[in-house]
Image: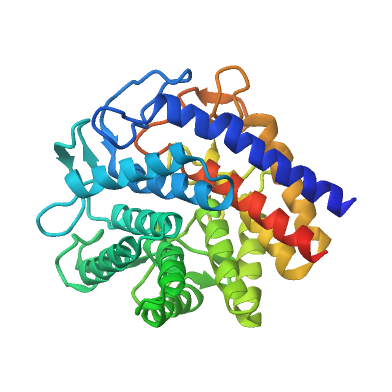
Length: 400
């Protein structure tokens, strides 16, 4: 493989896909120019199917628009879109107890709350990225304030309804891994402005990474599990045996990014590469290609109806993770893995007729349903991958 040629092509493809397809689609069809914020429930051609707004995505697109502004091109409309989402969040998306809603109406009227704090995390990184874009340190302070609220809610007994009753106490992979990335994004802004709090965020990252290594990584299965007992005990039921390869691969690059921040800390790098190798082995479909949704660590059938489907986001996370792995090691096996997942993804997900990417494919790669968005799919995983890919390729090329 001609490495420079491949990385250059990857960088150019990532930038053009972002600026010519993905962001224009959401700026035209998703951005709410009346109430502020963004709609995500869009049909194949961008037609609005439901005006319910995902609070997750107010923060997610607020982050993406500013992230693109900071790292791809200084387009004022992207910065304005980020501000629109942030203004909508602050006006409509927080309940009086500090816990955010999960869904609101077009005008911000609350519809639903859930027992999670993911919306808070996305709101926080939107503020921190907007701070970097505008030079306004107040948004970095607000990001830290929201993060502190997340920690308070997670560690106040009874504030968030537990997933299981005391008969089966457990801890989940999702919140543990997302805190690594959330804290890292906020820390970048705090360091940029010379604000206090960065060391505390690094301590929270260490806490999450310790939990991932100690509780969730199970070498006996060569797997990172989604749900374990309070002290990492293996729970031998359907939920306890669940492997979500996409989540695990995403975790691997969160840790690789942190290893890079620490001058390629060797222990973190090896931990992340181990998770990537394990999860690729479980996730890659040797028959049809692509990363499969769910597996059982003992080989039993998974009960989730989408267990053998190919969703959009595990593919994008694998594209980021393999580039990080190549940057960390220089080993061509990771670039070959990147080429493998990239070729499959670009061969199946983009809708070249109507724009954007399909989100839900059957195992064989055929389209299961053509909508471009809903409460869970919108402008986040795909544009984040495209931005990160362009950045990583450029960084690797500069070093070579």
